[in-house]
Length: 308
Image (cartoon, rainbow, N blue to C red):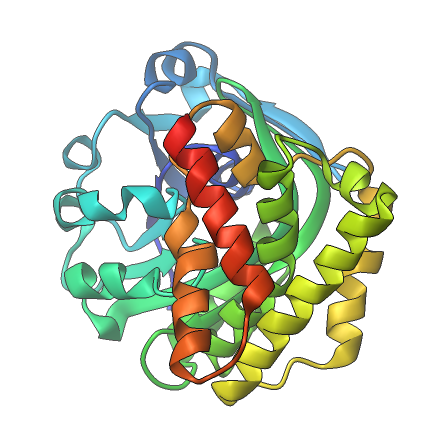
C-alpha cells in the first residue's frame, strides 16, 4: 500500500516539521494553511532540527488555503490543535475519497472520536508525537528533540496501512512505531503532557527547566504523573515505572523548552483544556480514582483561560 497524495491539515509546528520532511523526501505533500498561506506561497518553508536543516523554496512547496482547494488525497495528516475539532465536519470531507486514510496527530483523550465521526472509524489512525518542536516564524519549524511517533488503529488491530504509514515516515527520517492499543498510547502521552504543559501555563508561562528547578513544582510533576498512571491502570493500561521516570529524566536536558500549551497561552490562543486535563479527569472519576491534583490543575487552567 502506498500514499501517492498527502495533505497536511494544520501547518503549525508539527505540520511544517513532518510535512516538510516528507516533501523533502520527494512525496507529493500539500500544506493546508490559513494565516501563513501567502508567506509559504512566496517563500516556501524551512525546518531546523538537531539531525538536519533544510529549506524548501516556494516552487517546491504545494500549499492550499482550504481543503476544497487541495481536493481528495490518499492520506490526511491532522496536525490541527484539538480546539479546532468542531470544524472537522467542514474541513475533512473535501480531502476524502473512498480509500483515504486519516492520521490524527493530536494530544489528549477523546480526540480521535471527532475524526472517526467524519471520516469513519475504519479509516482513522491515531498518533502521538514525542517531540520538541515549535513554529518560530511563518513557515519555519525548529526541533530540539526529534523523538518519535507512536501510531495505532482507532478501531481494531494494526493492518497493512498502519505499516505503510511507518514506512512512509521512515523515508523522511522520522521514527514511527505501532502500538496495538491506541488508547494506551494516549494515556502514556498524558504522563508528560498533564504536568509539564499544565504547570507551564498555571505558573504564568514558564519553561520546563524552571519547573524542574523548583523542588515544589517538581514534586507536583511527580504527583500529577502518579495520578495519570493510576487512572490509566483503572482503564486496564499499566504504565511501567521506568516510563514515568524517563519522562522527567528526558526533560532535564531539554533546557528552556516551551511546551505547546504555554505558547498558545502566551499568544492568547484557545487552550486544549478538555482533551489533556478535563477528559482524563472525568475518566478518572468515572473509575473512582482520586485525582485531586489533576482536578486542582484543571481548575487553575480554566481560570487562566477565562482571563485571557
